[in-house]
Image (cartoon, rainbow, N blue to C red; front, side, top):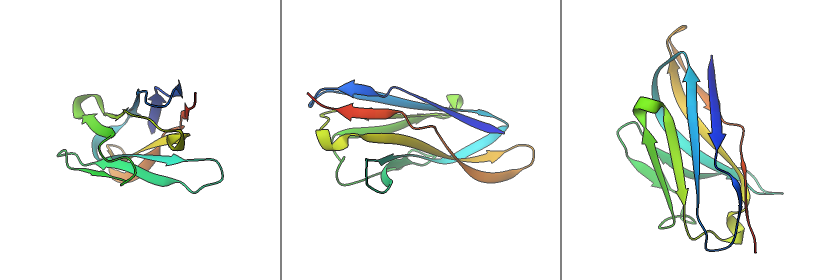
Length: 121
């Protein structure tokens, strides 16, 4: 019913920047909270940032001031601008979107496939 397609991961040097995007498609009525999570090797998945439909944001302390989450409601897309990247930011990054579908009319959470981000010199 709903597919999320992520893009923008890759290899970057410490101090560099990357921009992730996650576009939803399918039988979408509306999308409430959008978010980014990450999972480093050997660690549990953790919250990076979330954004509501109205634009209210929330960030993990470890990324405040470096990462910026944004969204384009017309395109059903969420973005994560990552600046001043550190080796400890290396992880697989997953987007999650809270989607209300049209048929059937109900809400559910959907996950993207998770592009890897590697920060290394």
